[in-house]
Amino acid sequence: MATSKKVITRDEWEKRLNDVKIRKEDMNKLVMNFLVTEGYVEAAEKFRMESGTEPDIDLATISDRMAVKKAVQCGNVEDAIEKVNDLNPEILDTNPQLFFHLQQQRLIELIRNGKIEEALEFAQEELAPRGEENQSFLEELERTVSLLAFEDVSNCPVGELLDISQRLKTASEVNAAILTSQSHEKDPKLPSLLKMLIWAQNQLDEKAAYPRINDLSKATLEDPAV
Image (tube, rainbow, N blue to C red; front, side):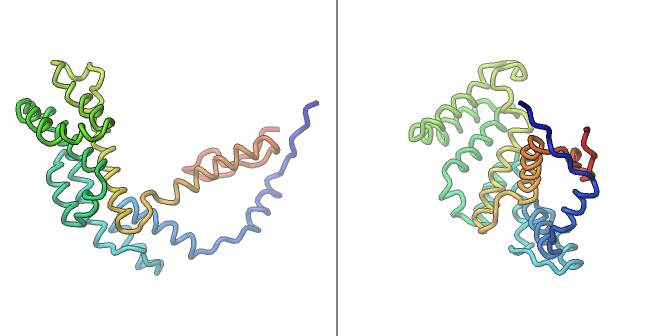
């Protein structure tokens, strides 16, 4: 026999929410964490001055990290590798997967620019030896080189490697590695908290009807359908 859900009115729900005390200092730290992790250096500096919230890393390093990320997003992989090594040579020395993906991105850019002979030489000299040591690297290399077998790469099975999304994926990987090297979380806390909110609401939906947040961008409570 099905049991009816408990109905929580807006007044009761808002009272419960108001009873939860959250320190402004904690909220400010959450905002600063997001700005720092995502690389909004000017906003982080302004927020620091307005709120008195100190970031947990030197804001000057954010500009350096964003320069690396931008270089990858623009396809300037050699410049990005140089910038990473200027920041901290150990990042690539201790992360062979990241270095391979950067080299793979270099190969993709050579193919994108029609430098076929240079691409083949680069693949053979720089990537093939790493593929011999790692099966997953070899498979990724074979997928990338297969781009050369198609005249119309837009319709080939691995054409997504030439999408801008591939650059963004590599750029995000580099960004996360730099943050980790600086003893900072690689992902901001705010999106994780929003995911927890969605999960908690979905759990509560099974037991009660209550004013819920359906649009996270507005964060307004909507009355339950009863």
